Each structure stands twice: as structure tokens, then as C-alpha cells.
Image 1 (cartoon, helix red, strand yellow):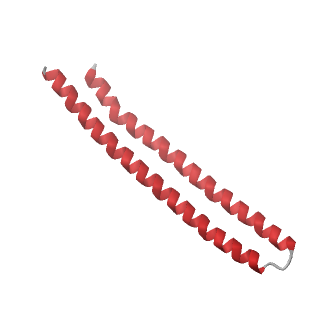
Image 2 (cartoon, one colour; image 1 turned 180 degrees about the vertical axis):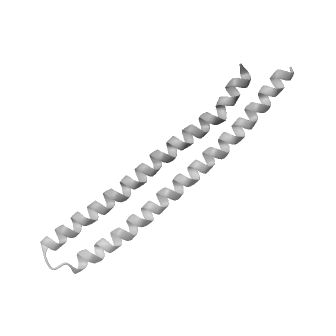
Image 3 (cartoon, helix red, strand yellow; image 1 turned 90 degrees about the vertical axis):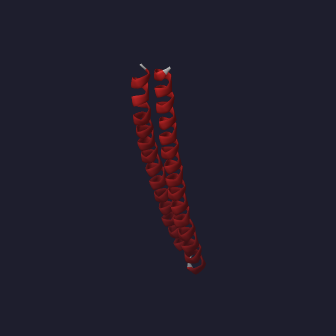
Length: 105
């Protein structure tokens, strides 16, 4: 019975820690996404202002290419940061549950 109680206590502690890690992961994901889309919003506004001032189709095309490059860069950075954060989260969760597997054995 004592082993079972110890197992349940370890399980509860691991669940609490994993919930804390997951909450932090989701919070940082939301913050990263919010910052990226705020940047995209500002870049879009600036792009529209640029388009309003162009004198030729060539200038508009060049502005569009530059804007496209900026959007791609921002989205790639967001993707890379999310991949990195997800890998870190997975490693942290694995560390939380590794000791539980040793105790249960």
C-alpha cells in the first residue's frame, strides 16, 4: 500500500509539473504569435502607405516584392521559434516523466 501511495504522489507531482510546463509553453506560443502578427500588421500598414505613394507600376511591383520578403521572413522566424519551443517543451516533459518511470519499476 505504501508503494501505491508513493506512486500516486509522484504521479500527482508529475501532473502538476507538466501542467505548469504546458501552461508556460502555450503562454509563450501566444506571445510569439501575437508579436509576429503585430509586426505583420504594422508592415502591412506601411506597405499600403507605400503603395499609395507609388508613381509607377514598377515601383508598386518592387514594393510588393519587398513586402512579400518581409512577410516570409516574419513567418519563417515565427515557425522556427515555435519549432524550437516545441522541442524544448518535449524535452522538459520527457524529463518530468522519466523519474516516474524509474520509481514505478
